[in-house]
Image (cartoon, rainbow, N blue to C red; front, side):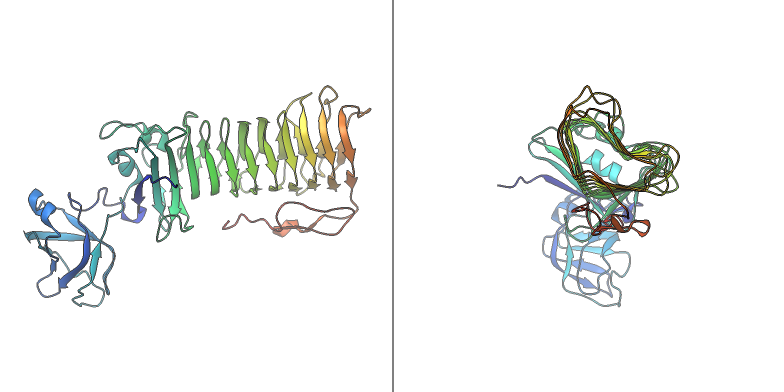
Length: 429
């Protein structure tokens, strides 16, 4: 049985209105608009509003109707439980429709929405952010807003009541990408203290020198675009899922995780800012089927202990970094298999660097293929610390169709069997 979470809608295009129109909930199923009188009528639809009484600045959110302009409309007065008078025509063709609808209006401001909404202490809360206009965090990051207790209790999620920020276009969960900007000055969510938070279908960007995300445990990022900061992209502590994200034009690490992460199907690309390391973990993580398109001094993947690194495609445009390397000497790696690494051909560039690992154990070292790196493999002599090793090859031609232009589909060269997905899959996700 699916959980029913409290759901909050935010349309940043309505940012000038920080609230929800009138001070009472108004639901219209089929109201009649009279163009001549500028009245809106539906039997007893305005009872709660009439009880409160009209106040200057009140507006009603209209969600549909023939030729109705969807959005907030100013109210001039209220005449009864069944009628209000509007300030202006609500239609695009100067007509009098009889099918005007109104449902719960979206908030116009994300900060205000969180502060005004009581966090669901049973099932958690989902915040749906409409695509089209970015939410701009001009005052504070979301971690500070969630901690606010002036109007309602602080939002403190846990394993049974999580917080989800998700984009939409028309209805919740329809795949629309909601935009959140750090206003060139702050993280979208920082402080490294937030647990059990998910970002889905979100474009998070413009954070100046701050990390776009710096949060704690059990957080998820699914189909999130992260870009435009000289700081880091996504930094988390333990137990995160980072899936299908496009991370580009960031200056710190693209993805940083402590332990027990699942990092897959992401596309990480250098831009005006270059990543220091594309993916960095401390350990016990699955890193698979990611694409990294790098240059300069950027490193690809830095593995933590007890990790699995399989079927990633890593390309550098003559860079001086390393494609894949352990984060520190003498750590155990469960599997390093079927990765494609090309183009670390600058001074000191290395495809796979396993130097100083003779004190660890590499369980499976299988099927990696490297091309055009200054040093293809650095593997300490003896190899007794590698439990199973086969078919790691140096290629005579590129394994990618056209990496320069973002096509990473593998080609039939050497014994290449698989890379990541067949293209960059990040631009538009």
